[in-house]
Amino acid sequence: MFGSLVDAPANSPHLRRSGSRAVVSDIGVIELGGSPEESLLHSIEVDEMKGVTTPLSSAAIMPSPVLLWRFKVLLFLIWGVSCCKIGWDSVMRMSVNLRDLFLYEAFLYYNPLLLVTMMVWFWGINLWVFAQANVNYAKIFDLDQNHHLSHREIWKCATWMTIIVPTSMTAYLYLYSHGEVSLAASQPVLLYAGFAMALIFPFDIFFLSSRYFLLRTLWRIVFPLQAISFADFFLADILTSMSKVFSDLERSVCRMVHRQVATIAWFEADSVCGSHAVAIPIVLVLPYLFRLFQCLRQYKDTREKTTLLNALKYSTAVPVIYLSALKYHVFPDNWVNIYRPLWLLSGVVNSLYSFYWDLTRDWDLSCFTRIFKFSRPNALSHLLYGRKWVYFWVIGSNLILRCTWTYKLSAHLRHNYLTVFAITALEIFRRFQWAFFRVENEWNKTNSKPNIQLSTSDKPTDEQKLLDPNGHSV
Image (cartoon, rainbow, N blue to C red; front, side, top):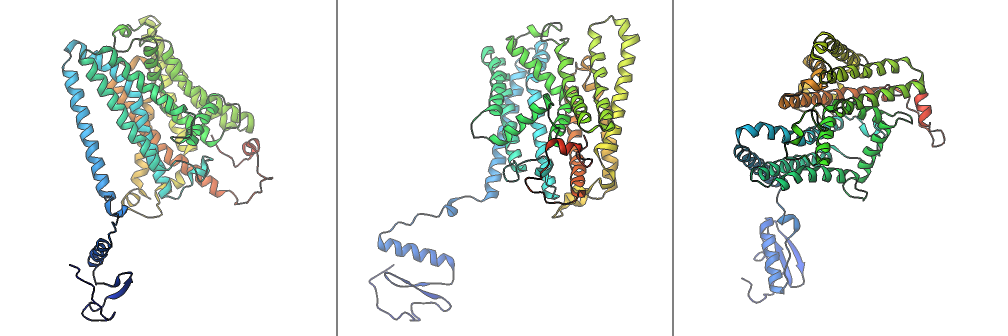
């Protein structure tokens, strides 16, 4: 294409198209045409003449974000279909007599982590809505303004959990159905150990500061020896909705410790890890006791009587749990005539008291839907903001799902594991709804305070914050 160089004026019309501009290079005068494609081809030809190899731009070889997203979705669908197919074939290989028992055991090991994964997804949605509505949740939870997890990072964690947990469950089903019992038994053990290590890993990887904040908050919940912050009682309230998850975690770990995974020894109801074990009601009641002690600590610091009423609310869950557990330790006639009526009464009191507290204390109905007023309105904001049906939906669903606590907290009603899983998932969904309005209520209280810039020396201590009448209401 390029012959010998020809001397020509720089402005020769034979060398330059109208509307183009001259570009001077070390081999002469190079002309750029009207289109970018011609300019790119011309520069490549010049480099070939000079013996120079031009590396392609990284932007030119990178696929578009849309293409990458579609490819990831395709891989996720292939993975999901493969897990379902392998799991179904593995279950069908078993005899009908053992199939239900085996599924019950597998479900026990994996349903707690599936529900935790669901909660992480919901929390990511909460953070996304807060960001859209300009709610400074980092300020509310006393997080580092520059180093806290965003909704995208929460969703990344949830995505990996969504992949890892079902993959381990599929491997467990496949190995057990093909006779590899010892390898199958190792799958839930490795999964639980991996999650524990990821949570307590001391090195600066995998969001160390956020993991430290979570562990520190959990420590403050278990031992409420200091001033109670908003993050403390907010997370403690979430833990009460996951009491069934902790109960199943305890039973799973118990079977791992006693080497009962992938065996039928644990089907004895009265065994140390059986369905009648004393540890079940103890673990179920712990989140409510933690929240109860927080309220008592709050009363010690503020002397507000409402904190005692809040403590009374959490104490009403204790009879529901222990009266249900008594069924396995009393005579049948005593259960039917004495303890079951008391259990029903305590369940009604707990549900209605908790529902009343949600509406009158945790939420502020005067600003019930401002959380959905996005800075950039979209279809979701238009659907939810200022709509009356949101009032009726949240109030009605909260009442119904509060009443299902009786089923969730009652050990003697937990034989149908699929039903209990569905009810626990609905309780987590109720808590997901609750979080919107609880954080909004706190954000409105924060904005209503005088905007006074305090110097470092004047910054109040935790105890002074608690004694402030405008402080957090727990």
